[in-house]
Length: 231
Image (tube, rainbow, N blue to C red; front, top):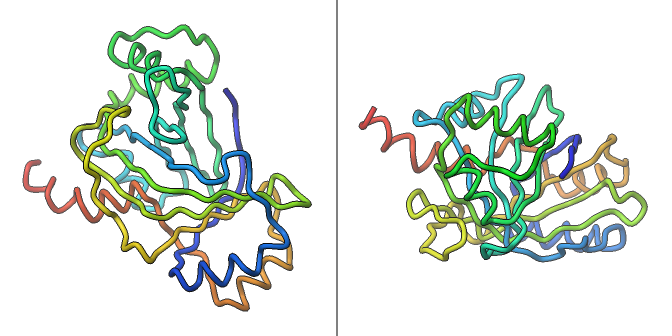
């Protein structure tokens, strides 16, 4: 359980750009505790997709609710139920950890053995929006932290896939690719400003920040044009 607050910056990389920046940062970063993992996410939204629609409009404040695990979970695996908020460029994440079986007990039976302020906030959000599972997202991630500052982290996400049906979180279904295999999403995460040596590497390689949301992209590409016909 915990609360996180940081600045996040995303970069859309080709495989060649990923190869180049990997070599340049090799002396500064080392793999974190997860190293390589498959991130599994289940995003929740209203019947009308209000949260992702608002997020895609790039407002000053936005929020997302998701269930996350590191690798495909079993009923006894640890999962994280999260509210991710962004206000004026600063990201905060409030989350609780539980077994997957405990999450299903909470979601379907409205019962939880977690009695914390963060869980109360999550429960309020679920009830206020009447949230339901909408999109499953899965991707491979390489995660690193800076040798001199563990709060300065880099992640590289690739092989991003999704599905809109069969949203059971613990079973393997056929997922669809969101991006071509040659593309990576690099996320820069820090509590402070970026060091000059890192921004110099980005500038030299002509790698620039971009606005990219995996869930937002699934909605924009795969849901919006279909869903509008059923409104």
